[in-house]
Image 1 (tube, helix red, strand yellow):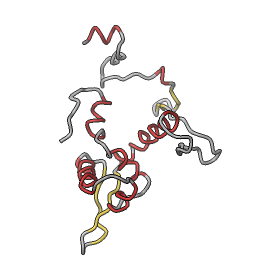
Image 2: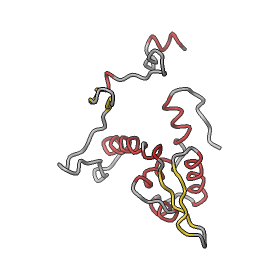
Image 3: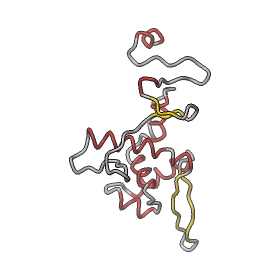
Image 4: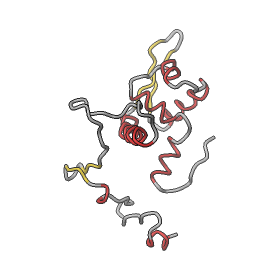
Length: 160
């Protein structure tokens, strides 16, 4: 059983769902179209079958993947990301970009714009305004509430 952070913070809550070892790598491989159990095992050397099974059940339980049977005898399933799961593509892409820059070897693949061949940056976008937004203009807010103070700021210290 995973230990939960027990925080309201959306990062902590996301890690409650996705932070166990192997989970995001399973999502990465599902994003790449590897949906059969054996494909997932082969694409993540070192993952035990029971661990993969546990991660798939966890993802299915949280509505991130769905299971489709492609054979009745014997029963065989493939796993497909739901809309909720496909939204993790941006998260995995951002981690890949950061990892290629700061945690990888020179030969580490980098998310690349197919049209021009250059590395891409992740960006915030406001669908209401239909514009890109700089990080400095983004803050975490509770629905219908004031912004959360930045960690370490005097306002955050006053609320602790």
